[in-house]
Structure formats: C-alpha cells, structure tokens
Length: 221
Image (tube, rainbow, N blue to C red; front, side, top):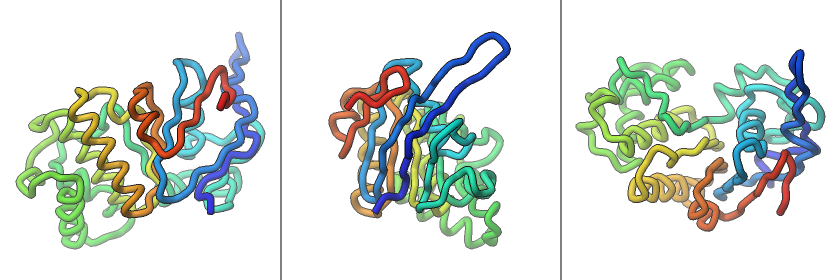
C-alpha cells in the first residue's frame, strides 16, 4: 500500500517576467519500509517535488496524496505538523536550545508533557547512535555528523512514519554520510518508515531501494 502517491503532478512558477514549468506531470508512489532516492541535476524539479510532498505548497495541477488524502483538501499546517518530517542539509537545529530541547520541541508542540518528552528524547538520541551526554550540549558543540543525527532524532519525535530528507549528507564527509544513510535505511527496513531522499550522491542512489531520476521536470526512468 502506498503512503504517498503523486498523480500527474504539475507545478508552475509564475512571475511577472517568466513562467517556469518545474514539474510536468509526475506520477509515482512511495511505500512504507523503503528508501527512495530522487536524483537529477540542478533545476530538474527535485526540490519542488519534495516541497510539495512536505506540504509547503500544493500542485498547480494533479494531486499529491498522503494516505489517500489530497494535500489540497486539508489544513497544510496541521499536515506538516502531523504527517511528514523533513531533514535538511544544513540541519536547522535551534542554536540556543540544547540537543534535548531540540528533540523535545516537536513533541511539546503536540502537547506532550515535558517529562515525557525528555524521556522520549533520550530514547531517540540513543536510537541514532549518540550517547546520553549529548543531550545537554548545544548544536555548536557537535560535529556535522552528530548534528545531522540530532536532526533525525528530532524528526522521529514528530511521530510520523514519513521522513523526507533534502540532501542529508550534502554537508558531510563520506564516512559520516555513510552513517547517516545507514540510519535512514534502518529506519525504513526495521521500523517501517517511508524515507524519501533528494540527493546528488550516486552512491545513495545505488543503495536506495528505488531510484527516481528527474530531468527538466519529468521522470526519465
């Protein structure tokens, strides 16, 4: 069963001076327990596709469906809070919050009590392979690879089974990049997450369960 489905999705950027067709009729499906790599050169439509799946906008035409419900028919703010979690290349951790507070943040937004959220944050930090001592540190005290693990833990705190990753290894060396991919792969294969990774890294494309290649807004595979 598909967690996500895109049906003839088109997206047009329209300004006073130009009209750009970023996506030209994309149809594909994403299931639980699998890792998908979305690849393509700059301007191919990868980021637009991920943005639509993340609920940052709705298609100009066609449908993005999550659990068979179109994003055009729901409250996008609630959708972003409850249905999808996004992991970014630049981590996007709150610099003035500790690691524990960063991971707790989405849980407390959902109304979880602080004591419960703190306990869950410790569990998630362990799940991404970091020691408990990390919890009281600030992001600037961590390496890039450690920060990305914290970002994954925070995403898991959103309690959704969909992880959208935008170049999650782009700022990391090959060793740390490999570790991050292995964590995401385990989350898919062992815990049933649907993991969609936008990437330029051909190794991720080869290791993913399925690779989708975009060119000028169209799927070419």
